Length: 223
Image (tube, rainbow, N blue to C red; front, side):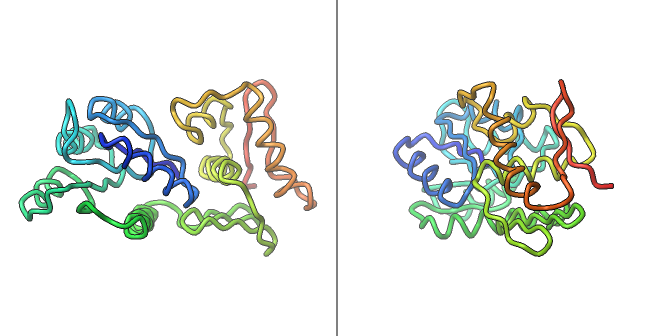
């Protein structure tokens, strides 16, 4: 699961990022509205967290522009104002929820989980391919009834492959979906994570699910 956080208080933004990472989310952080809008429109996220008061472009304006682009990504507004009209303005601009500062990380986690559950109703809640299942909200993977422990990156790569089952996805597509937008990724990084993933979900079993399409990328076939 990938989250965009747009918050101009750098100390707070970095603390929120660290907290979200402990919950196994991949988090991109920017500190002004202009960068936030570029990423919100140009990249794919599962949740966007926006401060209302931002340099250059406000969180309210970002939300409006995102919705005008017909992007349905759930949005949580962060505000220090707490007045009813400010909450209404945020919701009217397209936000799905709001948090008034200061807030606890546990409350933020709960709001994020609630939005992910809500948005998952428009997708498959638990992904299943043959005897392999992946629960994207509770971070659980099983195969043939056996629970498999994956790292954050392994889980994210597997989720991406399963959502695009029967379609060959390139290494670049995996990197763009799984890593932070500014991450410095070596050419072999994806291959290393795919190998570790295969060791866990393919090697102990008779049927191999992850296929390499030489010169293109990888695919999981559901047939």
